[in-house]
Length: 339
Image 1 (cartoon, rainbow, N blue to C red):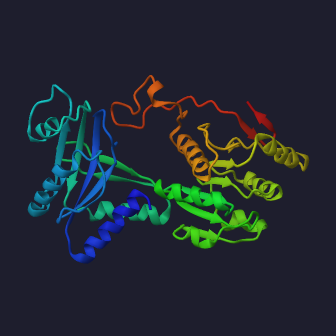
Image 2 (cartoon, one colour; image 1 turned 180 degrees about the vertical axis):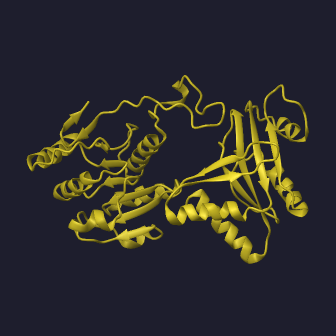
Image 3 (tube, rainbow, N blue to C red; image 1 turned 90 degrees about the vertical axis):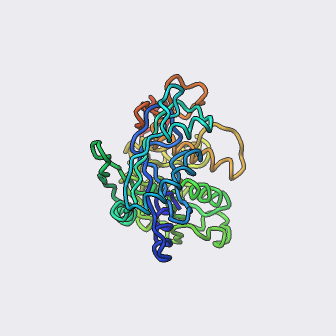
């Protein structure tokens, strides 16, 4: 379950109990901060929380302020300044006493009436279409909260390695579909208990049944040459955002050459094979980590190098996503090898 879905579940549970809640949203960051603008935490009147707006250093103070906001039915903008030369008001004194030393400013909007904001999140999750929600911040221009639906991962293959893949994807908050083509020795379906969708279609209708779209993240792990070739051919008609295929490069080249020999010369720039980052390890868990780390890098337009070697800030000082890396990769296409 992704963070937004978890917050909604928490909200529904609190509503059933009759427990008031306040929503804390990061609306501005200047300098270093653990979370970026748009990060949220729902705070119940009894002190329970769901979500996060920091690495744990601000939550206790926010709970106290949320209870006050709920009692007074009054929204507020809270500014936490962790810079060494910050003026010492109450919030700054809190972070200084904790010795955080993060060297940044975080502004958090606390809303004791978050129903409209949470309804917008629910709409996005249900419709799978992102939208902008305008947050009226006191004495500032409205904060535009860009709400995006959770990423959707589709695994073609239900072997033992797919279990680690979907479990890690669940930790990332991605919605996962497992397509069991019975192409390799399948594991008991019970090991996929909790997966968002589990399908057992015929090969010819697998891509359609899985509802692959332009924003889908697809991994081919059937361990069957003919199945992967048929799936890749079907996917080439409307390529998804990402396609990764297990197996060595020579296997991928054989599949692509076979498709090209059938007259399918459509380029497939989103194909990554072998999939994953070069981190070593050959266990199912290590392969899953390598594969999903690569997908995260693709989604973030990052080169997936060592952060310790990065010459620019991880995030932009103003709190945006930061500069996109010039990602250099070698990818296979249906017309040959792209270097």
